[in-house]
Structure formats: C-alpha cells, structure tokens
Amino acid sequence: MGYGERNTWTSLVTSAVGVVVYAVIIGRQLGSRPVAEIEWLSPMLWTIGAAIVVSIVAGILWGIVAGVRDPEERHVEDVRDRDIARLGDRVGQAFLVLGAVGALVLCATDAERFWIAHVLYLGLALSAIVGGVARVVVYRGGMP
Amino acid sequence: MVRPTRVTNSLRALREQAGLTQAELARRVGVTRQTLIAIEQGRYSPTLELAFQLCRVFGVRIEDAFQYPEER
Image (cartoon, rainbow over the protein chains, first blue to last red):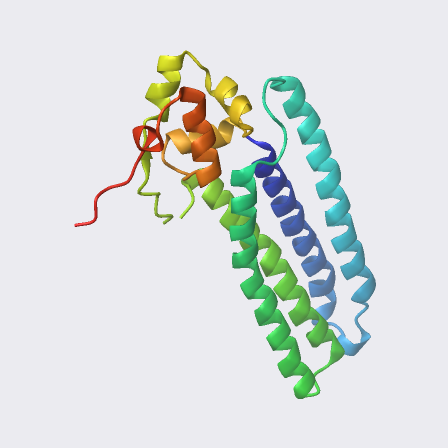
C-alpha cells in the first residue's frame, strides 16, 4: 500500500471513529434533557481534535513500519495520489455545501443553536467520510 | 462502478524488454510502485508529462507505448 492510500485509510478510520464516539456521547443525552442543556461544544472539539492527532500519529507510525518493510519504495505522495485526493475533495465538498445550506435554513427559521451546529458537523463528517470512501474506491478500482 | 480508462498501454512488455523491475521504473520516473502497477493494469491514465517520462526511459514514441481506441 502506497503513501497516499495509507494516509487515506488512517484519516477515514479516525474520522469515522471520532464521529461514532461523538454520536454516542451526545446520543445518550438527547432523549433525557432539552437540547439547549446538552453540553456539546467541548465533546465536539475534543473528538475532532483527537481524530486529527490520532490520524497524524497513526500515519507516522504506519509510514515507519512501511519504510522498514519496504525500504526500496518511495514513501512520498505522487501525481496519482494528488489526482485521487482532488477527486475525493470534490465528492466531499458536496456534503460541506449541503451542511452549510442546511445551517442557513435553520438560522432563517430561528432553530436551536444545537441543531445548527450539528447540521454543520454532519456536513463536515459526511464530507470527510464519503470523500475518504471515494478515494479508497478509486485506489482499489481505478480512476474514472 | 468506476469506469476504467480507455487508454491501453504496452508498458509491461516494454519494461520487461528493458529488464527493469516495477520498483526501478517507478523510481526513474518519480512515482510509487503502486502508481506504476495501476498504469500497467489500465486502472490509471498517467498525465501527459508522466507518459512522456515513461516513453523517454524506453526510448520509444508515445504511440508505441500508449494506445487509444478509434472512435466509430
């Protein structure tokens, strides 16, 4: 597995785990109290930050292992990695836009701040996960 | 399902003729071995620049290494 594909897998898995952990933390409180009383900002920032840090550390560790196992290989990003990254970004961007539009609609209807933040978060999460899945599919199957 | 590229190539034959491994050829043109494998298997169309670099290694014209089907 090359440098770009390794990084795609680490960021995809850490993003997905981060979203699941956050969803469990918030999901437990959702039914039991009003959304205005739910403490969401701190868990959201912590899970996003932890996912970024774990992704970087895992990428470095996996890179070291790959370098030891296959010292002949170039462990750097190349032109195909950049093409695939662009394609993944394009796929993910659609969800960012949907999240932003959803947040605008909620602002216009004076929705609770909790829901506005979570529509934006959902857009970010889907952008990272669906964009990552698109990259993995292209790495495995081929460029369209 | 991802549509594979319509560009085909003779890179594997040219590489074997030249006695190069995938790792050696990849290093010479500045890509990873996985990228070279993807090109040889028709899963990735190289950029024009990379295609010229590959042809230069083998000393062949671009049409000798890459083929594109005629439009009917």
